[in-house]
Amino acid sequence: MRMYDIILKKRRGQALSDEEIRAVVSGYTAGEIPDEQVSALLMAVCFQGMDERETASLTEAMLHSGDAADLSAIPGVKADKHSTGGVGDKTSLIVAPLVAACGVKVAKMSGRGLGHTGGTLDKLESIPGLSVNISRERFFEIVRDEGLAIIGQTGNIAPADKKLYALRDVTATVDSVPLIASSIMSKKLAAGSDVIVLDVKTGSGAFMQTLEGSIELAKAMVSIGERHGRRTAALVTDMDRPLGCAVGNALEVDEAVRTLRGEGPADLTSLSLELAANMLHLAGMDIGESRERVRRALEDGSGFWKLCRLAAAQGGDTRVLEDTSLLPRAPFTGEVRAPRSGCLTHMQTQEIGAVSALLGAGRARKEDAVDAGAGLVLRHKTGEYVREGEVIAKLYTSREETLAPASERLLGALEWGEAAPVLPPLIAARVTRGGVERY
Image 1 (cartoon, rainbow, N blue to C red):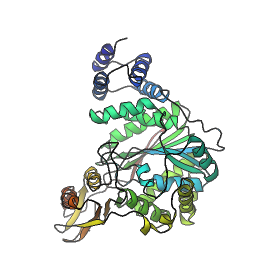
Image 2: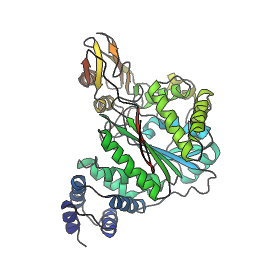
Image 3: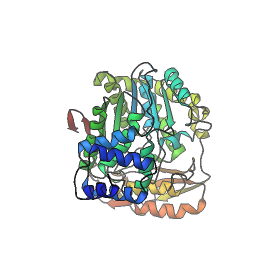
Image 4: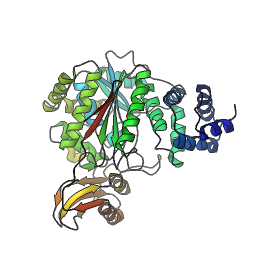
């Protein structure tokens, strides 16, 4: 079969066969198909879509392009959680310890931030000494002994996805439901857990900015997980505002620690508890009991101590968790003040993530370094009344020259009015194999 014919077929809106999809994935991974032809096919998929069978076939082909983790040697149910990416989303640092404190093991492979979104690995690495690059044997050992570990994707987990994602990132073909769903689920399935809970973001800081698009993505990923025998559910959650107040790696670790100590922002605490409860529920517990158990793990401090055990097992200095003032902090700070009195009616969340990246907390390319101590902390969010001159946000950076443009850009991301807006619910829907439950 010729790649030309496959591109033409999809451009005309026809479904590709399993054999054609396997040929594209294996040929591109092996370097036998050039970037320009795969780029053309990706663009055709963005315009024409893929049906459920095609999406499952693409996931399967990427899953089998490399190794898959076999976690069967670790006793008990193994759970995993994935977020589609957002601003201020540090829930993995809260949810994984809570779930482990409740007796369900969490074996998680995470990613790095790119563009306006943060990455769990970058946040963890702001803990001095902590390594996310450990051997598979040590990963298994930590999960067995401590109940949880979070590491980077190993070199041969879904290598086809790594190549395809890099190409999508530079060809404006990221925001396609079948491409996002197959990318995420090929890695989640390869990671080997029995239970997968997905946090699918919706709003101005998400890849899918409409609720219906986010539900469509959630349904596609749940379908893929269930087809492969994994108990899978998704929560569709708000990203029209940053989650919590801190945006930036060490700043988010600080906020995660405060949340595990019962002192975190209400939205971050509420979502973390619900994600953790859903993981326990898929692992076999009643949903009511699951919610009660994760709340107890938060209140009695056992979730916090699980985070400390995770950090210690992966080489981290736990003193910075017990005293977060020891976490990295960028040396230059600035305050963004309200130019007028009024109600914050909207925040362009993606822009706020971009401001954090401008300060040094994010990266434009995967190979870029991040400044662990850079970022921002919001003092006010959408729906709140702010008086002229009040501090809206505090900025942290190691590049003093970025403070002025970052302040200007952040102010440009805010919209003002006289009346408070009707805020979207934090959790808009829950998607399972049984269907969609709207909140």
